View 1 (tube, one colour):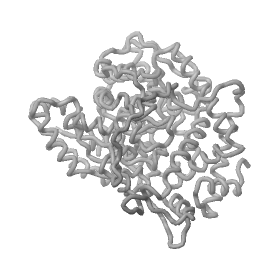
View 2 (cartoon, rainbow over the protein chains, first blue to last red; view 1 turned 90 degrees about the vertical axis):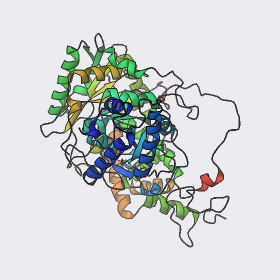
View 3 (tube, helix red, strand yellow; view 1 turned 120 degrees about the vertical axis):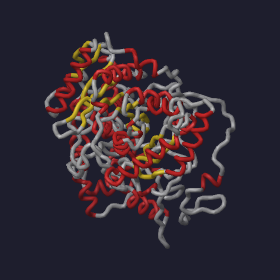
View 4 (cartoon, helix red, strand yellow; view 1 turned 180 degrees about the vertical axis):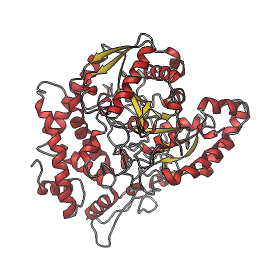
Length: 486
Length: 94
């Protein structure tokens, strides 16, 4: 039995029956990390000693009969999420040696629930990218095909969960950074409703779009993680006070009678034929389970990319102004250099090319004379995109679509063409503009064996509906049960 | 051309970035490609449409103004590139 590919429920049962200790389970995962990291590079930091110590503590909680669903379960955290005493780099040279003095709220919640943290996952620098190639510390490879990107920006998290070097992971999604890598690595990824999970301790990229969420190998596993991290945080003023439902209970609801909306704009020309085939087969499966398919329209879909690549860089340029060489991180100072020289040298040498590109784009969009034409206009079109979704959800309970227009592309294929790279998020970013929950679910493979994902979008706080659809789908399909030959 | 090399250099100054001539040239090309794509938005008449600047309508939550524990000074200074016992140290300003 491969311990690293157990479901959380299977591991829970063995742990609670004392047939397996968390220390043994954690050691099995550390062995898996040692075996897979040379080819994957999914982790930036591995905290083996701390993991074994938390596992030993978890074993005591289990022995006392006080285990919760995640007690003693090993997992990884994206390196944009602050972890007390553990280096948090955002995959950037500018934060290479930054050690946070506190835990992000979601990390504190997971620790309180008994999670064993194995380490920090690789990502695109400051979560800006779609392939994890923007990591200052080298890319992550896709476990299904080492020549392929794992997706991004949470590529390390998705690759690691797919390869069994973590039971689950928590990433962040600003325009698709959970869903797109989940799709490319054949795992489940959920971007919750904006405000459902606290952002305190997430290093900010675009504050009106950023949201943290879980990766897992099944919807049932994912629900356990969401249950722990969701909920109000008085220290995040954008965190929602809405009560957290019982996500586990939602799993068994089924899809009978649910209306699933197909946005006609998402199924237009340009979709890869293999993606189209896999998504259409998934729709037929859902129809067979009793869902009703209805066509809906999101007439402003075509404008989402332009809106996103104004708003996200604008917020990024403001948020990343904090990296100035004064309080933390890289600081380049010369003998006779001025304060301004320190800012210029630190930022130019600390940030990678994509981060510089977005800071430049955002600074331009917010600068005098251009603000109304870019940021102002983008905010207005964002309103139109939100209205499109509100109208669509009057006709359906969830929207289904592809996650990405193609399966994972090859490493290096798009690095020199920013617009082509940005287009890989075409189906995912409008969800963030509207603050909606969105999930990526494995629904097939390309001829070349690269995974394909189905996207489910719901109205605000409709995570239960997405979980119910996903769990019903996984009950009659086995795409999520396939494992890479790694 | 949407943005000239001179404007790129000006924006870099605003963003506190020092660009090499090669970087300026490359970014000018890339930003022009991206900004050309943004032109699409001008096809839409948005007169009278309110702007969305936040993901969810928020009530702007209030709380009691009570003192609570915060980071100790040593913890707050722990990552400082240059510091003394109580301050961040920066190059001379005046």
